[in-house]
Image 1 (cartoon, rainbow, N blue to C red):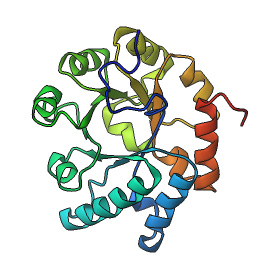
Image 2 (image 1 turned 90 degrees about the horizontal axis):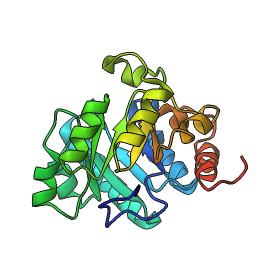
Image 3 (image 1 turned 90 degrees about the vertical axis):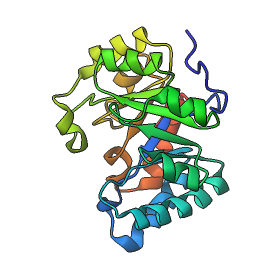
Image 4 (image 1 turned 135 degrees about the vertical axis):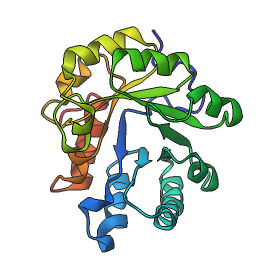
Length: 219
């Protein structure tokens, strides 16, 4: 089955490592440097997800990140806020499972990459039926950012989802370099992560290791 079905604007090696932002982990003066390190490390898909930020600050950060990602040939995906995605000319928008219908967004803005968050097989199949370009499936392992969605899904449920849908599935939740090989063996197209990179001792080096793992290079 095709893992990039319908993704005209997704590079063949794209959506392997989608780094989700969490600026609360950094002092304000260090936020842009953290993004710089991740981009230097090779990440080429960044999702801006900052629910705690006031709208004006969120927009300002989106504008700066748009400039940074363009410099690196990377994609910027905005979480939930379709209006912000359009304002900054982002590459895509990531929708919550109960958010805007993916097919409505694609019909009006076909140039946008549209992802959808899913937390069950039924939601994954629904997202595919509604025209999503890719989905995240979470939480795979325990992680603070996803506990509101219930207990970990585990690798078997992830494998079930990857076999049931034909669009790219990004595993999300508690993924690190140690458990990454197990995640890859489920057939997941890629991963989305937060603390696995942002909370590491070296953002650049850890990013490089994740990227190497998807290229089949030794860590």
